[in-house]
Amino acid sequence: MVEKNFLQGLGLWNVYFICKFALAYFGYLTLNPLANAVLLAFLLLPFDRKVVRILQTVVGLIAGFVLIYSESWLPGLDSITSNTQNIAGFSFNYIMQLAIDFVNLKMVAWGLLILFVYFLLRRWIRVTVLTVGYFAVLALQPMLAAWHAQEQAVIPTNGAMAVPEQTVDSTAVVAEPTPGNPETITSETIAKWYTAFLEYEKERRAAFPQGIPAKDTPFDIVLLNVCSLSNDDLIASEELAQHPVFDQFNIRFDRFNSATSYSGPATLRLLNAMCGQVDHDTLYDERRPECEIMNRLDQLGFKQHMFFDHHGQYDNYLQTMRDKAGLTAPLESSKKYPVRYVAFDDEPISDDLAVMRDWLRTLNRDKDVKRTVTLFNFIALHDGNRLPRQSRWEAFKPRLKVFLDDLQRIIREIERSGRKVMLVVVPEHGAAVRGDRVQTARLRDIPSMRITQVPTMVKFIGIKNMPQETIHVTGNTSYLAMAELIGKVIESNYFSVDGGSIPLQELIQDLPETNPVSENGQSVVLTYKGQDYIRRNKGEWVVYPTDR
Image (cartoon, rainbow, N blue to C red; front, side):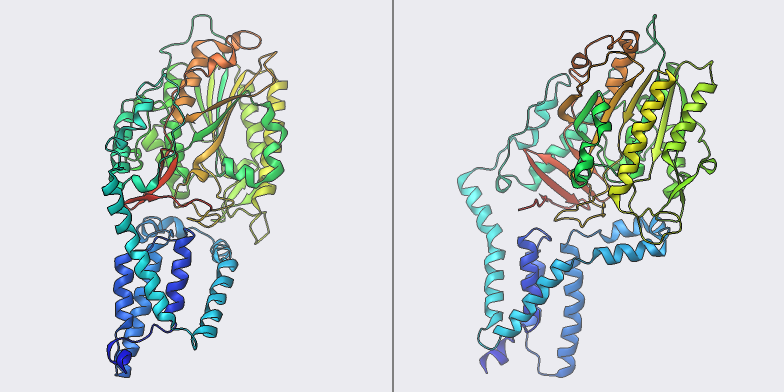
């Protein structure tokens, strides 16, 4: 009678909280102690009237759903509402496939097992006592940890400047950050570091020639901007990570950060590669002509070209590039190419090899133009693409093999043409083939390093006796390093001598490094002292959960 007059048991709500404790332990959500304590106390209140108990259950269900959603890593309401127009463009088949693929059968099985064990034990064990007791210990842990840290005085006072000190001199080689203990680093520490990072990046500019060398050997520059290909996607694709086309590239950036997990901002960052990294919102402010690499090359006599395997209309992609990055090149119509795939929004996607062959024919016809710079944007690897007349999306791995095979073919055809070409493959972001504890596979709302670390590569075509081995740039880099490399190639008249005018190792020496920071509209992920941290909706910085 005492419990009935004072508190009631949680009943099936025990299963709800036990499942949340398990998800939090494995990093699939972040518990909000205060909100859970309020919900727990509300559910424990005893009510005699049936109507009130029903109302208590209904309110609890609504609050429980809202709470667990807010604690999860799922896209927030702001992210969904800001992308309403783009989501509305998804085909029905794509939405249904996403919904089906979203169900984690392993988690469902564990949930059913917990439910079964609860029904098995509830007659012999007061499960509510265990649930409340475990939650009390869990809720007190942060307070005890903070008290212990304060007692030991281990929280660093200079943490905000630890990593920027490594990059104050853009010509210095950045040392590998030493791992930090997350318990000794606060949200304020990361916030100060992030602010210092943006301030430092604001002033950075790529070293770039003001004119063409007097005895210049003309060549073409290709920026191959590929959607949905990260280093982690290559690992997930197993043997394709060893595709022979990779051995043909002269330079590979091992830790190149595209700084975002969406196409629009990725290409904007590429087109503004002459300047340091800015935050997501600044990308969509006024144009910064001094940062626009295509236009800077145009001023040096490189005629602009642009080829897509799509129309450039989804998410107002092409117009945004023109408005925010000053892109002026006319877009070659994709209607003249054969269709390879059908996109998630039912848009036809052209055969990439046909597009690249058309580009090569275009350059060969225009005999008077000695220097060109071309932006390719390919979305053949984007999630949800399917073969024509098929309803089910085509898996990533076979599409990747087609792309890599096509890339190998076009390299051979350029070599046979006799043209001198600097080919730069710079993916926009990854496809999230494997997913992680924060996001299920195929979701990219949060720009994790798994998604934004992309295989950026450079090949010099038309130079005889080039070194056979690929030179690796091992430091943390981004678009600024790519822009400065292009500048070095122009300034050194690299194509003028067999084997290159300077050694490859000298060409990549002292390229500017950039600390890993990746952003979307509502999320920021960065690496600080060897640990990844995440901030959502301008909230607190927390440790990014990693695989245990």
